[in-house]
Length: 354
Image (tube, rainbow, N blue to C red; front, top):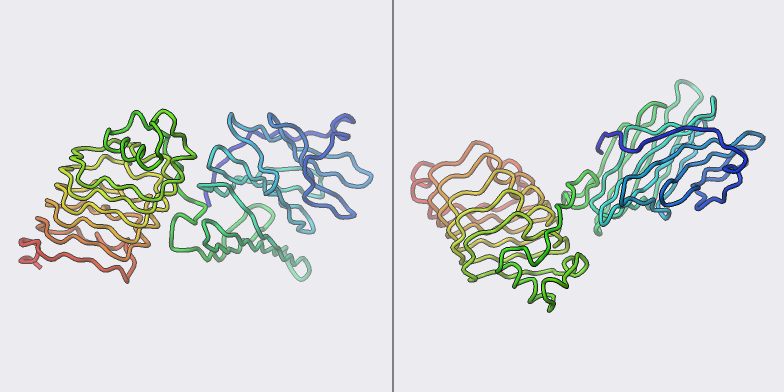
């Protein structure tokens, strides 16, 4: 969960014209009131309408390129207040703003909390439990959803002021977590390293100027082995959000630019066997939370930074055989799962010092 204050909010009592404006979507309706969305794409409003009272609205002013996802709009009645979540989308990303309506006195407030999603936010199941008698209010919010085929379940407490996580059952893959990294800026295919551009053109069977983000997202495998690839640029793999396998074996590749693999959240196999890498930057793999297999064998690795394997919390296989490693920083393998198999044979100086 990421804490921020994002939207520009104004609270107002409705004029008769606003009060009669048609609801775009109705989320919550009981005898004592209803919550709905009104307005247009440029400016939406949340409205609470209670019997024998003037409707109360809160204005949600979106940034350029953002829109409300009406299908995900929802609310929980918490007896003394109503908690509302409002999914917002922008291109392939999304986040969920949260609001609370207090019954007495009647007013809206936006919470300084939001769920951030790498893709569209989907709140598939939300339930709640509130206890008022016998002490202070004690409310629990139970949230379940499926993201990229993985189940996410969490419980939060609501004390009338803030939403606090109590128990979160999350998949190990970062790709399914709502607190993930944003997608990198999309680089036009024609502006990428020639070998990368050619490989993408071959997979899509389209010239580079006709390849858009939808075609890029459909690519599952990309092979760049034996392409005399001497360097890469940040953004070479941007937009390849569906990529699961990337093969770069046997290239005279000496270094990797920071951020080159950002956005490859579904990548499961990455192969650098037989290249000429002497090191890798710290955090270079931090977006690769779904990666299972990493081949760095038969390179010229002499040293590795302490954060070399940050973010690889799903890795099961790491090959560092046949390199020139002399020593390893303390805790370099700490980010890896306990069951990850790490291979270090044929590093003569390292094996001698162990």
